[in-house]
Image (tube, rainbow, N blue to C red; front, side):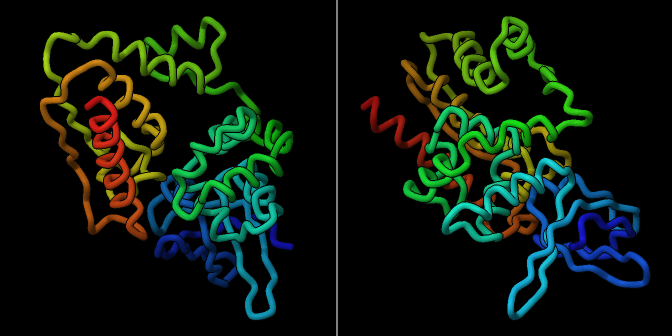
Length: 265
């Protein structure tokens, strides 16, 4: 078993990277969350790996953290979940978000991942129950608690004892309450605000932006009880997109807004 590879990053061809170590070049498939944590080509890199041995190939999967690898191994043990689907889940949700969705049995967050339908999401929730709590604690150095982030509302909520997920959900409501209700609402979404593991077709190249469900929570809270005057999405770079992931997110955001309009009509 190959558990970790340290070498030089020599090629990026998402979702595959090539790492040169000991005179050999290892092709490794990675989730988008790992891809955007990688250094520039030509620099040293370490990946925690999982080796899958099939009849027709030996395939290496790589991850930035032991927690991502552990979550991947838990996912592929679920009935009907293959490696590609597991990578898609980790590309759309952080380990902490996945663990939180499982703990709360929130299938709605899983079905937003491309390739995950309602039945598959429910099976994931059932079979992953009680298996990701310890894994989520490993997703930060030395098992440190999640940083509160820079938003004062989220910081205050977490200081009051809310979990990160609760703080983000209730924080969206708190931010929306700051908007005037007697004026029409103009929603202007900059795709750079989304985490590049969810929207690779953006200019941002550092992790830490909003997940899809966080963006939709903000939109929903802002639109509730307000008249929409306009809606736009900017900073989408089609040439930088990977497997049409960003295009799919943009399309879903448009449908989300239209859905709110239809319900309020």
